[in-house]
Amino acid sequence: MAALRLILADQLSESIASLQGLDKDQDTVLLCELMEEATYVHHHPKKIAFLFSAMRHFTAGLEATGVRVRYVKLDDPANTGSFTGEVQRAVKELKLSRLIVTEPGEYRILQMMQGWQAALGIPVEILPDTRFLASHAEFAAWTKGKKQLRMEFFYRDMRKKHAILMEPDGKPTGGEWNYDKENRKPPKAGMKSPPRISHKKSAITKEVLALVKERFSHHFGMLEPFHYAVTREEALMELEHFITHLLPNFGDYQDAMVTGEPYLYHSFISSYLNAGLLLPLEICEKAETAYRAGSAPLNAVEGFIRQILGWREYIRGIYWHFMPEYSERNSLNTTRPLPDFYWGAPTDMFCVAEAVRHTRDHAYSHHIQRLMITGNFALLAGLDVKAVQEWYLAVYSDAYEWVEMPNTLGMSLFGDGGIVASKPYAASGKYIHRMSNYCEKCNYDPDEMTGEKACPFNALYWDFLVRHEDKFRGNQRMPYVFSTWDKFAPEKQKSIRAQAITTLRKMSGGTL
Ligand code: FAD
Ligand code: DLZ
Ligand code: SF4
Image 1 (cartoon, helix red, strand yellow):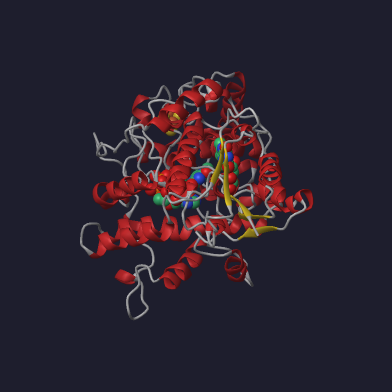
Image 2 (image 1 turned 120 degrees about the vertical axis):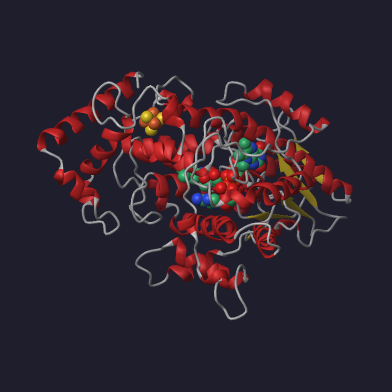
């Protein structure tokens, strides 16, 4: 029975389930560039260009091996603009009798797929995405009987299951599961990370850049310069570069932030990994090999592997385990609209402006900028969880709902009520001052709590905690926070809260 095999933009792996058992004589593979997907949130132009170029290169690779591909370009006059429209059109025109897909990374698309069998009148097989290392059933089994779903314990099971950084006696390499206590160094003065590699633009990429420039220039973000890898070979070069030149310092400076240095020692592989150009296990194995060869220390290698084997798989597990109800959570009842400075409007907060600049220029900022600058501000200011999620989904080239939502709603905004984070990642300007050199360039003063020059994060931090005292006072992981607040004189408490009100007013008025 001739099959249509749909491949989504984030399924660009030869090992994807929907390509297995393909019959070159009968089957057709479908990839499509879709207006609906590019605009349901206004994706960053670099993200659209990366995905379109990677899809076109992936198609060329399949065709070179004799696979028949129907590739629908964005500007094809017959393009209906949606997955459903394109699948319907292909089935009708090619007279195919079954459809094979791999489960998507977004609940919205899964719902669409679940309606296709009835709409098309042919069998539709939705296959599991075996590129992930924990299946839905495995994750569900892990959650059974647990009061708290802590990533650390899930991660240990994954280490054992995949024999990563494990010794023959069943103990973790080095004797500890986690070396994070060695990993929180502030940046050194004048620190610069080694240059990143960049990739020559192919004719395909040039054509895509022209298309994206014409159609999506009004979206937030700079399209060029464009240095992304767009093939598996190029993504592997990025990975090699990271393992050789950056991994040794990854652990030490994982939380550091430096002006003008968007990547520091971070890998910048999430876009390639999430789109399927790299696979999680090969990355972990290369990192472990570097440790065993003595070219990277254990704190760096373990910390890096934990992000992929632990956090990434855990986050995906949370998304599918709790959807669709998860998306409606807003445990802190936040409602304030997203201020314009998230979209590049001026702000005197240097740290926020810098994180937004990196985002605008690269469709990337590293984890601590996402969590402790833009995320922390959104948490403290009580910004509407849906608006914040939409921002994160649109502006990062690695963003798909399965990974964006639990990170934003759960980890960053505490909007899931504490499933992902056991306490809110709330911090004052003191933390940002310690972990970055941003405050040196700022109009605000991280040591001031009140007054014109006071760092906005400071009063907002206390105001946030007091606003949500009912939720956080009893939190075992925040023992000293409320006792510090209680020791402040009532006058000081009053002026801090008044400062927070002024700060939020300035934010709404566009003058923060
Ligand atoms: P590195 O720091 O080098 O880490 C290595 C890899 O580990 C990453 O490439 C990524 O695949 C994985 N990883 C690390 N942390 C996480 C995490 N918390 N969740 C899942 N995977 C992780 N990551 C996304 O891939 N897509 C998103 O849309 C996304 N949105 C986020 C939103 C917020 C508010 C926060 C706080 C984090 C978000 N993250 C997201 C997680 C993380 O910030 C990025 O994976 C990371 O910054 C990507 O950069 P890197 O490749 O240089 O990562
Ligand atoms: C994010 C995105 C964009 C911008 N464009 C496309 C597209 O044209 N075609 C496509 O197949 N997928 C696209 N995607 C990814 C989807 O929106 C969605 O996030 C993933 O397919 C979920 O698995
Ligand atoms: Fe950010 Fe406050 Fe430092 Fe300014 S002073 S950079 S607002 S933390």
